[in-house]
Image (cartoon, rainbow, N blue to C red):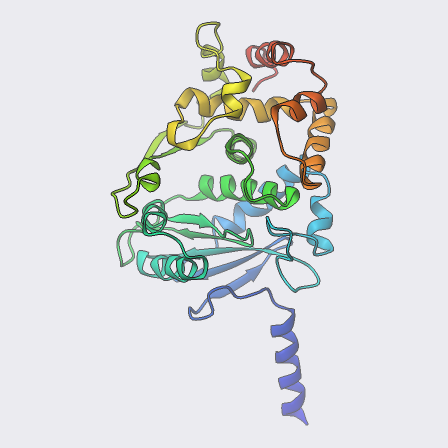
Length: 325
């Protein structure tokens, strides 16, 4: 009878746990309020330290985010359930070495029929979001070295990706425009760390006919704790250097410049910079969740502007003011 009770408790525990996406690897697990952190041969940071902070930042921006977790209404970009649990937790996988990261990458490559170019760039950058938006995988050392090594600081990329993931979950959209996903990732970084680490990825080779072509990954400059991206952008917000609203909305990662990446961040920040703007931006998100395309016309209408020029005037004035900080 005692053994039956123990077995019953074990089964109940497994049933109540979060989905295990890589069952062939052995993981240590820690549950937070909204995240499950699974680790292999490494510690729980930066996930334990920064994931809930990111959630709190995004909770102020995204309407209904709390209900998505508490009532298990967190959805994949296609609208399907992200898990079978009563209460959803987004999973963060942290691995110590390139060998284990390679194992995760190849499992997902086989699941989703990734091309070799996609596999290559993922293994270079050492992190990726699940295409179904249920989990994040991060390698904490050099992802191209099979063994372990000195662990790197991955906190900015963790926060950036979680901001993007929470945005996708609220909109139920996989193909959100780059300005929304990257911009909200930058915003989350800025709110948590008061700086942003800017990553530039050369995806040109990925789109060539030869999927095995060499893909280069380059990391751009990192703003230090005493350096302010808003201060730098104010210098770039002069008449001859300004990036238009249309160009910002059309930005693509394969042609992204440092100036454009900054304006993507500034655009998202501007739209949530006051209670009135944040409320309108939340209406914009709600419309997209209802399967409306996030066009420039929808953005202007929802934010209360009749044309690009009137939007840009307020946007540029805000960027040049001390309110942008």
